Length: 237
View 1 (cartoon, rainbow, N blue to C red):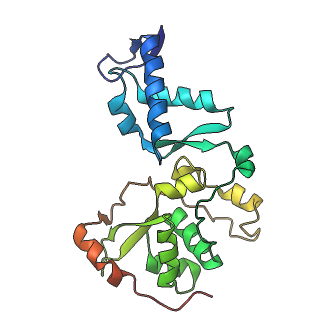
View 2: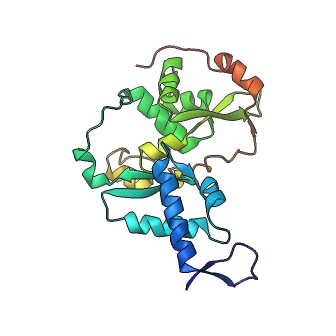
View 3: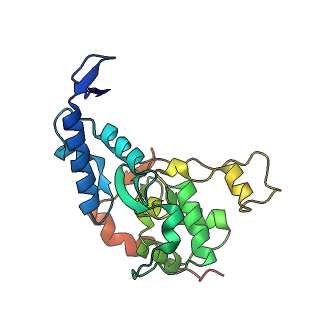
């Protein structure tokens, strides 16, 4: 018999005993759901379709271990799951899919700022970069599916805030935002100068769906106004 954590019906410290056949069947169901999907599948969607009493996280982690050494890996993207080609075999895979256009230096800078500082407004992005950010730069990132409107700041003018998407995590092989490279990793990759202030810290972003205390969620009425919230400026150098 296999033991797994209870689903809340058992007392504290107790475990729920699940028939190995049910766990095996649950794993087959989860595997089929992810395999048949064109994109990452949420754990909530998987849980709804598994036998009652089976912990979906337990099932997915077991499947992840099963696929760890294969040509296709089961990966977690935020609270979603997907099959992806093993990183060391990606060079042999040919695809006819349309690739995301190559990002300019300005777009890479803006994407990095949004990733580490989200939720962040356009004015805050410009303050960090020290240069005005064009409407086109943000449009490119949003068309790529890596940046989204998060909410609106509770400040004069109620500026829109930007954040990254699940596709951003998926594209860069991150399970969650907290997997973004830290200070030492950025230094090692030569992305930070050795002369940076000793008090400098890489920001730890909020969870993808968390709203900051001074941030309100986006409404349908807000969507109609977005063209006015991010007026175009001078082109980035």
